[in-house]
Image (cartoon, rainbow, N blue to C red):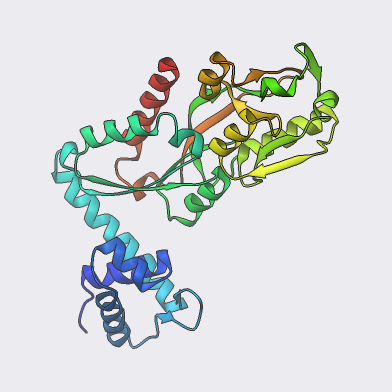
Amino acid sequence: MAQPTFKQLEAIYWTGQLGSFQAAAKQLHTSQSAIAKRVAELQVMFDRRLIDLNHRHAQLTDAGLRLMKGAEELLAVRLNMVNEVLEPANFRGTLRLGASELVAITWLTAFIEQLRHAYPHVVVDLTVLQSILLLEGIRAGTLHIAFVSGSSWDTRVEHTELQKVEFAWMASPRMKVPDRRLTASELSNYPVLVQTPQGNVTRILGDWQHEAGIKLQSVITTNSLAVMMHMTISGLGISPLPVEYARPYLQDGSLVQLHTDPDLPEVKYFAAHQNPSDFPLTTEVIKLALDAAKNGDRAR
């Protein structure tokens, strides 16, 4: 029996991971027809149907899933073998990285610059989403590492704390919110801007509401922190914002920080991953992220 080639194994692995020949072809820098041909060759070789195309996304059969798992292990061994021989600076591979929006608009650029300097041959495949969705990517194996906010974890996800971020209620001066310590119930009289429920910060806000014993009455949701900031400056409502990110707007008078009882809790941000062996430089990447996050805090 003929043996599968690495190109064929890559084709079945990435088709299974990404859900289509087109996405696998993009990942492997080849054509969609080449991916389909390699998968077809594997089906003939094993005399098994490996993929079911009668779905919206390409779905692996049971035999296809078993082959995909074996392919993953072989490809990881090959990558580790090559990189054991190379100096770290010559490491080659693709880092599938996820980042929450706050990380993306603060210290992520500095981190990627450091990563490129230390490992110039590493390609970063970046996804910016809400933390909960990024954690789903970690659990599914579609991301190697994600920089996320969080308050609880399951046993499948390993995590390293990167930073603590102070959040506070803020408003436009035109809303004329009293300049004194406000109770949670007083805040509920104002329209509130929050991020969508897929954000861990929104969940932490929900815990704060529960602890304070209130229910916010008028709530406007957005999936973008930057949009929420703009809407707050425009006077559409009050919102919980990261203090250092909002600092320039506090200094120029576009925003005012509200003093509340109780205060909003600090939000911790983590580097989350599931299996360090998925990407051999996981430990080194997290060290770079720690440095970038700390320098970003000092810079602000």
